[in-house]
Length: 424
Ligand SMILES: *Cc1c(COP(=O)(O)O)cnc(C)c1O
Image 1 (cartoon, rainbow, N blue to C red):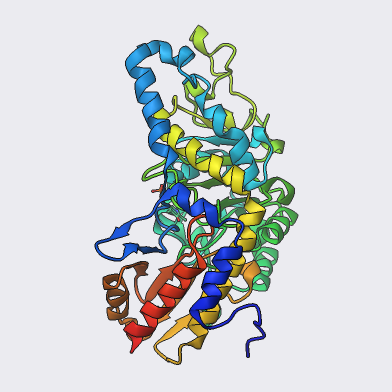
Image 2: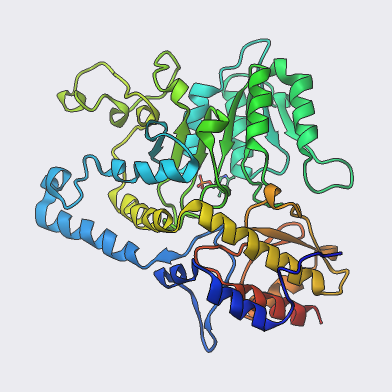
């Protein structure tokens, strides 16, 4: 079946591919969890918590030192002054998601941001009040949209869940577009994941946005599994808004500060309702402490509070590495690395596992979701016991994510050896 002369089955291929990999040097920039006797673990859970950049500690320590040395004066006189600190990551965030700098800001955490954005971008009317989400979305997203419906006094039956066809695991783009075409006039908001956390399916964000706009719907994406994983062009795709967390592929640490995108065409839509706080207020007059809220233009106008500097410091460390490696180069490696994993898994003659992630590289990021027959979690326990970091998602999936920034072709080969052995 496979025409993949680009891959070969033996371990020599992995060694040679690592030697030729222009991004291989980035692995050293991260702390790789160690196994008691065997050195580096095979860390395939960067889709859940990305690894720590070695620079993160220094960056946070600098802020601790400045705080100790300067106290409140750090707002203006720290090495990287705290007052404008969030701006130090703006350009990098914009590059990462394909945005203009006015369209992005780092703030809060993901679910909080989804709510704040829905305050502005979910504007139900009697005729148009439905929300579209993918069935099997990350639970937090499901809770968020349902609670938004209830908040507006709308039945939760107004939530449309995109469901795969009978017997299929992933959604077909044609079915998504057809639903939008059919029901669009009653849909206020389409808000789905850029990449589904469970199946690893990447959606055609450009086509969905276009179809939604054609019907007058607002279109937003949760990019938790897409940011730092796919090449994104949010501005060119004309996406209305997006939000993502930074502790998965972005490696900014547990609970790290999240990010939002608001399309430039909404930058000065000051008539949109929004929840306000002083950090979203005009910078020129913020410290006059006046009574009237004057929002900043662009994504910054959605900020509420002064941001957590230690988290921003960790994010800055992480994003500098993305700037150096560049998203297109990472994506090119990612397609090869995941293609190699898929190729090796196909060598295993077993009925016990099957991949549910799309085989088309355009429809996935780095993650592969392995469905295990009969929900047999023992296979997962066996690979875990052999030093692989993967995760089990109920009811029957092992997720593995070879991350191009720090995973190697040799990691993929070791994973293949481990899972082959566990299956025997
Ligand atoms: C990881 C993830 C979340 C987590 O939300 P937090 O607010 O960061 O805790 C939410 N939605 C999706 C799609 C995710 O993948």
